Length: 165
Image 1 (cartoon, rainbow, N blue to C red):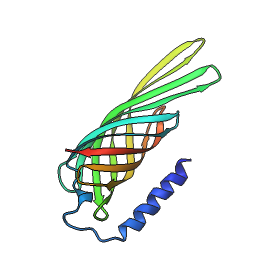
Image 2: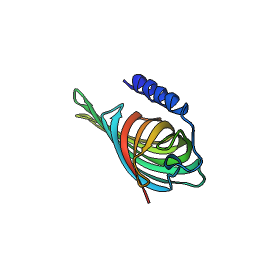
Image 3: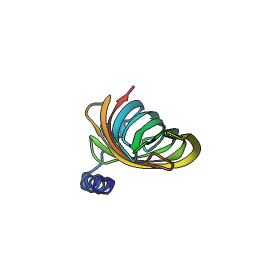
């Protein structure tokens, strides 16, 4: 499921990259932002809360909390969440669209439960992601994103909203 979505994101980014980028456009004006998104993870429906800031027109930081959901196979349930952040790179494509990439570290906590008991695990994992942001107006944007984080949760494809303030 994730490969077709990645191909679609890359195709859209390529098509949009053909549009000329402007010096002062909404696509570059991320400012300080917060947001939320939901999507599909390796476990189940994922929920993500994030916030960050661009320090220059192309570089900034982003922190996020991701609940990967839970998955039950027979009598075994697996749950996971992650908390982390890292470097954010932004490439303006046109007046409304910008592509972005992220690279950072995440604290990942997972738990596996079955009738025999439960086992918890935690680790620090590398996370990387790519996405597209569509600025509807200077304060409100939509985001489509693919993020890969090591550990139980794995890959997350999400759609969300971002508010600039």
